[in-house]
Length: 246
Image (cartoon, one colour):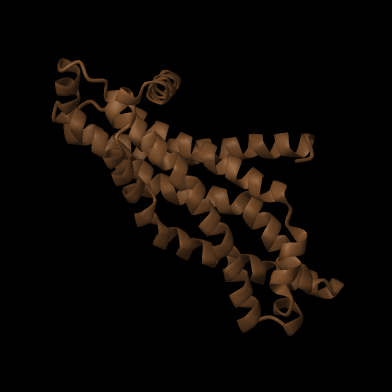
């Protein structure tokens, strides 16, 4: 997988240096639609429910201390720094990662990859790079949407269930609490998660063996490895951000 990442990076750099080798817009746009646009609905729905859960779970412990109005502050930091990127990446691993693995695995079984290589065309350039770049970009865009959906879920819950002191001034308190580093740290993680999901999907898809059974196995393992990788990467980022106070 590291070799695949290196090869994908090489083709991207060569495309920047040589216009003749640049990635065509058509395949990239198609992958961005498949990975990102089609995921917006499910990501938004899941994140709204995350906001609902956060608001209700925090209301009871904060109430005895008279700090219920701090729900907006907590949802803002937790959502933008961590939950937005992580939950979006987990959803995308099942929605896009599995799709990438299944699509490439089917191409391997149908010997389309061998046909590309027989024509001296790089599968990494034509198949991997568009998927990796599209997932990387759309993961960050989806995370921005997800962050606000979490905040919206918390606000709607405050409006419908909790006390006026929670929803009055909700957005102002969240705005005052958030810092630029909260946005940046979330986007950094989102980009890395996007690379992880897409690279694992491409790697598992291109190493399929054994026909339809192999495709199913690759799809399953893509989701499993992606979720494990996302959690491990999130833990590493949390330690780094804590140590360097970012």
